[in-house]
Length: 294
Figure 1 (cartoon, rainbow, N blue to C red):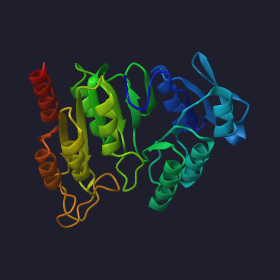
Figure 2: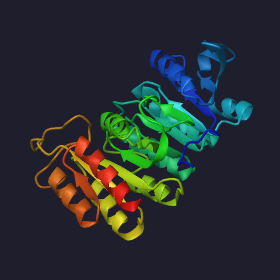
Figure 3: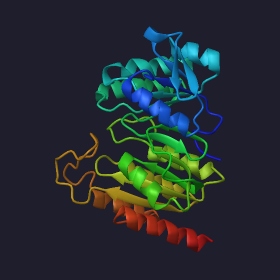
């Protein structure tokens, strides 16, 4: 099993014919993703060759969905056009939109995440690495060769830390890994993924990676306490971050006593989540918890 993305998922790529879209479409195809088309109104009717496969280009998401039955789109378009691209996908009725683009204005993110939610489209991102269900499908830019199918679910604000934990725990493997993004406004939260992993019969343990800024981790801790029966292991990046300085992601900023790594760690531990001091220690905690449950 998996959450959000399976081998049956049919994937469109908005911005497939651009430099980044081309590069990552090739990587997604190599990982086994069922990419059924790209979207570019100026190149509709053409096909793009990726090694031994020709992928058609459609003029709109509606055309791509009608021709292929696509239910997922991965968005690689530039920041200025991302809002329009996501709204188009949501209006077409796509089930999942994975928004890789970074540098999107916050008011645009508010607009398209709200619009998509009203139309039943789940948005992952923006400014995220996407998600991968190892051995089945990969939607985004996560390296597919650093882990294998397994029994751990992972939800993370950080792309880099997603990759590191996937590699640290490669011998156990993952059901699904979701990079939700670190912008102030995102479409899918830690809580959304925790709820999905709780329902997934093949996920035995969840790794939750957070970072300074906002209160998403505190809210996730409250959700774990009330609703999650599976073990959760956490890591919070940014213990040495200076107050008032944005660190990495646009949403990773400490203001006064709000959003500190220590406060997040305390909230998670109060909810029964074991929290590692480093990514490596977090991986060791995961192995210890799995051994306890064996």
